[in-house]
Image 1 (cartoon, rainbow, N blue to C red):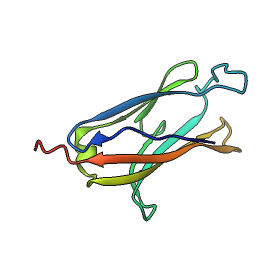
Image 2 (image 1 turned 135 degrees about the vertical axis):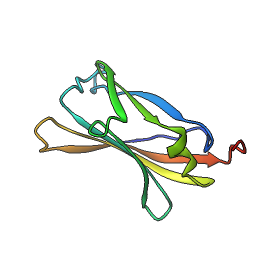
Image 3 (image 1 turned 90 degrees about the vertical axis):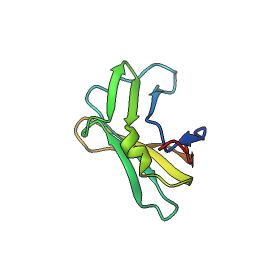
Image 4 (image 1 turned 120 degrees about the horizontal axis):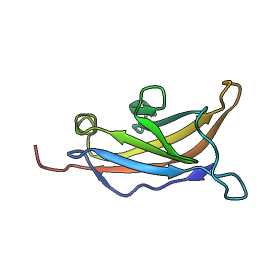
Length: 113
């Protein structure tokens, strides 16, 4: 598992990022049959935002590369503060889930309405 520290994000803008998943030899992993879930939660570990391959907010863009996207409307629901994030991947038959990342996401008030 990796600890990821995201840079500050505004709650007045959409947010997209890409990630790369590799094996221990740094070869990209085929994610086409896997399920990915990325969550943003408050300090009480309540989920505020969820992106997944199931809801279409995570897309597989190339071998080993995925993209997460939250809309402006979703980001507006976050108050200022630091949120916890996590990413899991589940294999194609659902028998194994791995926690890939955890880490903080600081949200600032973007001021613009």
